[in-house]
Length: 120
Image 1: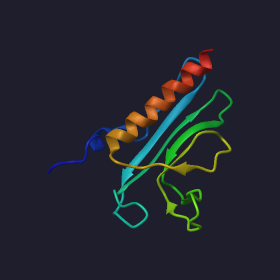
Image 2: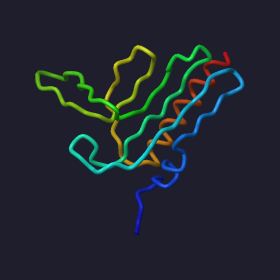
Image 3: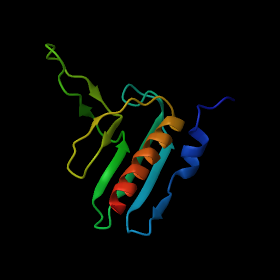
């Protein structure tokens, strides 16, 4: 059976927690669920990075719905579950989930950027 790109790796990373030397730490939670309107890809995930004070500074998840910001002259809002939080107070912005592999790359790309900034 052919699996989606990166799915096996994402599922293997479930439960991973790692603390960096500077006190920042990350946690990965991911498991399969029945596909639904809210989670059409069938993967429930929560990938978070926390600073040394245990404040979430980055999070990719689909644990709750968010409303996309209004654009242009149209007043309708799209409700999405896949989203990213870029601070501890960010309510989330839509994230376009294309594959588990891309999710992993996007998370670790942002994680590495934040850790590099924290060094300065």
